[in-house]
Image (cartoon, rainbow, N blue to C red; front, side, top):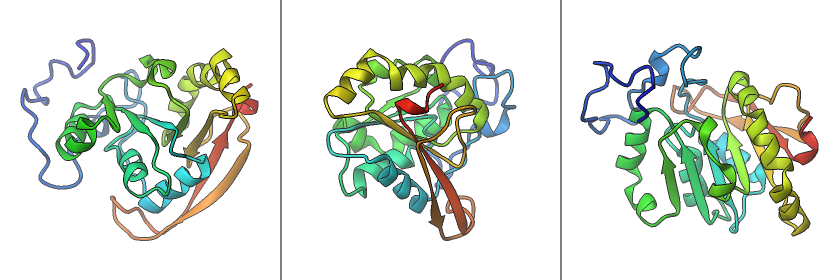
Length: 218
């Protein structure tokens, strides 16, 4: 945990974080304002049906490294490894909230141990996507967070490494859930249905998915 975070010395953060007794871990992000802090999105678990549709829409395959910035409880990544028809070679989740990071470590130890799942407990705006080997991304963030990510994502989609990957027949792509990058045009969009009710499953209805490639960047 970075020393300059607003909650770094808060009494609300115990020195030892217990494993959650229920599937929804206590979080700091949902108790902090989304302005003037490193947090840019609340923790809202994505519905499994929507996550599966996003993985399919992104074309995640066996040679991919899938990255989720602000991964929450890592459910998109673990679903990709467990239920997707062509599980990626590796999944990388970046999560700043220490409670969510501890939840991932407590509940997905074997995946972390075998290297198929990688957790980075840090600010997503400071990661190096090239060093992670990212080939495809799925993001569930508010427009404010997507706006702040545009310089990083634009370079990842359009830089020299991206051009080399495209020339080799492996173009980079990204799918967002519900929200779009302000000012960018997705190359495609589709709806994903979801069933169930409650916070973890989400209310029945539809979610929009948006796919971005190099041509989307302005």
